[in-house]
Length: 410
Image: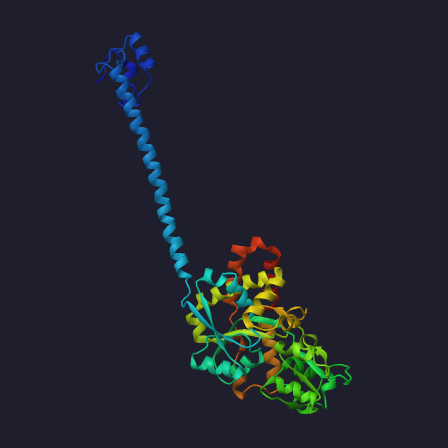
């Protein structure tokens, strides 16, 4: 293709021609006596320039198209994986049936009003109950999925009786459960209950546990009066049938405003972090609905953060949810002992189980039960980590506090 008198061209492959070298280069070669047979060093014509310009544009377009295909190819490779990951976290059921008594559920109320539940793709359906017996009957019968207002002592007793429950979270770490008596009653401490009549269930380990540690046998050294309706406990103290009583958080206002009665102390003062109310469900339900449980916990954790930062708004939301006078709600929400907590709190649950076992309040078969098998901390930790990753920048200290609490107690 090249002339014999062009040794320079003989050292260059045909790729040189395709490289569209500048016209001046070809002209210089021609002046030097280049005799290319192909005429590559002949003076450019307008058509030659057009051809080369067209080739250059085609190459440029080809590069752009190739680059775009590479980018779109990367995008196509990544997005399906992300969508698959999101699909893996979809709640197994869209409706969760939660037992609800007269004290309401503040975390769920906030999660509902702030749209957290909707964002998680779940809806909580309340199942109204008046007694704790109704709660566990409902769980057995499949009418209720989750209980979270029935203390810690009652689900532990149910586990000891053979009901396969799993504690996966919590509602209250401590409530406003007053220990009270008639106004003229002296009070030196929890040991004053010894030899007296107490209107309360003996499985209330926040009282009996510390007495046991003090060397007393509270089950035999205290007379227990335990009507199912807690209002009857208040009446028992009024009429002298009982010397002391303990009632739940929802009745704190009733005791505070009774001129015949006085609050001596609170359960949390006797046993700090006693684990007022844990959240539990049938183990089979938890295992079948892990994404649903995590979604609910994420909504509750976010509601917990909202509660910490918006106390007054929380009062209004709670009043709306349970339709009670605002002063009734404030009697416990404004009390520093009232502490919301969605953490499973394994250490507090273990302590409660140990107290109840030592007191003989569990079924005989309970010795064969490892209570750790009925506490799932994995789902809560996953929900907490996800919340911190997504929303931690809104309140870093709050999520750091929760992570530290989890590390200490689980």
